[in-house]
Amino acid sequence: MANKIEKEIQRIINDYNTVIETVAKKAKTAKGRAYGGVIRSIIGELVQDIAKRLILISWALLDKNPKRFSFPTDKIKVPIKKDYIEKIKNPEIKKFLLDNIGKCYYGQKTDLHMFVDEKFIMAIECKAYTENAMIKRILVDFTLLKEPYPNLDCVLFQLESQLGGDYSTLGNKILGSFPTHTLLSHFDIDLHIITLLPGERKVNQPIHIPKYYKPLTKESLHKAIQTFKELLEKYQ
Image (tube, rainbow, N blue to C red):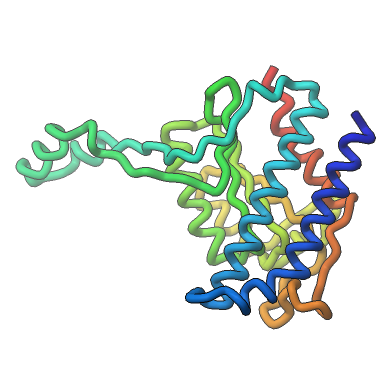
């Protein structure tokens, strides 16, 4: 088991290196698409793929049956709040909503939804990097998902951090940053932040440019696996 997992971790690192080394060339030769959009799309797919594979490793290390979990792509139906309808003063609008209550929902989705035993247990937002303006949107998205699934685990999985503080140090005890904690204080979300690459993300130093390249290490991946294990071990 250990050798198999180490080989998969090395494959993840190899795939990361391949994508980072070739993404600029692919973006330049892509027809009909903006350079930056292609970069974001390819790296975004890479981050999602790494997250999935680390979850698979974490599940295997816990000796769990792989048939128990899945990653459905359907949007989650977030229902309208009944107390919102009750507060509406216009009787025609209130009647319209009550008569169509089954249609009153919002389709919400994050990058990865993990189901165990057909139950939605974890939502993962995957980012090449995250800044605090993005955190606001992420927290709103998770808040919506926790309406129908209050026990949902919420994870931000990112290559680089632009959140300030020590999120980019990859230490064992992360204290965070003042702006991020301030935003978190306004939401009832226990957000688990996993960062893979050290060093604060710099706008003018993208990692797909060779001189700004950052290596993905086994130590970083093992740390991420440990976080996922801690979240998943409660599912017997």
